[in-house]
Length: 215
Ligand SMILES: [Fe+2]
Ligand SMILES: [Fe+2]
Image (cartoon, rainbow, N blue to C red; front, side):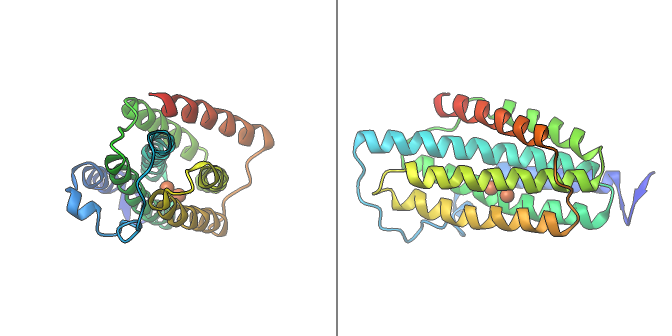
């Protein structure tokens, strides 16, 4: 069996599978332990405010589903054990983001995007393809993705209803985590992506956020 550092491909596949099962099958009480809005005193939202929050949080949930696909795909094909661990560590935090968005959508009586499987599988394939170019490009991709997510979260923090302090509390913690993921990827040797690649990523993200906000 091919060894990558001290980790074989089978070891990595098992770690990714274990992570995926925990992301999907954790019960609600466990998901809520780190929920940033558990102590937020959110006033009642009007129908219009609630539907705006649902639309935005559904987009964020879809983004976190994609993050799981990307990180797992990149982890599987990573060449260096250190890179593998750093990607899995970030994927673990992204898993919490995913659960927080899910909890908030339930509180708002909203639903997740029906295209979750598409976002996950599309991102998983993209993560594998990118990581095949090498760990430096893979980490550069993480840095650029996370920077774009920070910009996106800034827009959502502005667009959310003023009263929706619970969703804002969640996005603020996510924003801080995403910025740290970008910084870590850069410090681990991420290469800056060419202009056309950054623009293509923005275009792809635009399609996903537009579709996920509706279905
Ligand atoms: Fe995230
Ligand atoms: Fe992140």
